[in-house]
Amino acid sequence: SYATTTALLYWPHAVNKYDGTYYEYGISRSLPPLNNKRFNHALVWHKGIIYAIGGSESLNSAFKPYDKDKFIEYLDYNKEMNWKIYSSYIFVDDANEASLGRYYHGACSFRDEIFIFGGRKDSNTSGRSTRAFAFNPETGVVRKIEDLPGAIYPPISAVAYGSKIYVAG
View: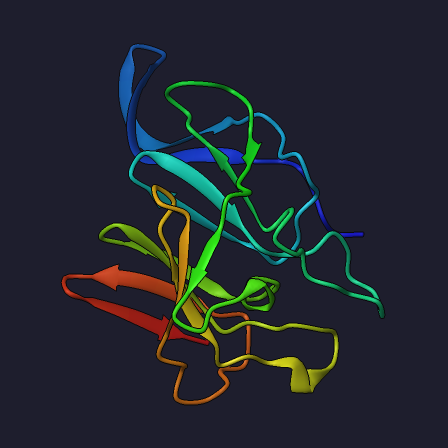
C-alpha cells in the first residue's frame, strides 16, 4: 500500500538564522498523523483549516475510494493537534452520497466553499468522472455544480485565481 497517515506543513518563504547568517528558504514541519491512510487525495487550506479530501487506502485491483464516513478529515492547526472526520453532510441540488467517493480529483478553496472536480470512482479507466460539486464546511452543504465539459485524465489540479477556478489534468 502506498497510502500513509503522514502530513507535513511547509512555509515557502521562511527566514531562519544559521551560523550567524540569515537564510531564506522553505521550512517544513510534521503535523499529527491522519486518522486514515490516504493515497491520491487532495489537500486544501480553507479559512485557516487544512482539509484532506477523498483518496483511498490502497492501490490494488479492488481500489475503492473513501465514502462519506472517511471522505474528509480536517485539522485546525491553530486550535488543536488532532485530525477530525467530517460527518455532517447535507446534500442539495442533485448532489448525493455517491458524489463524494473519488480519488485523483482536484480541489481548491474559493470564497466560502471547497470545490471538488472530476477524479476516478473505481480502478478501471472508464471510471473517470466529470462530476463537480461544492462543499461548505461551515454549513455542511454539498451541492452539485456544472459538470466538467469532459472527463479529464486524472490526476487533476485545481486552483482559484481572482474570480475564476482553473482545472487541469
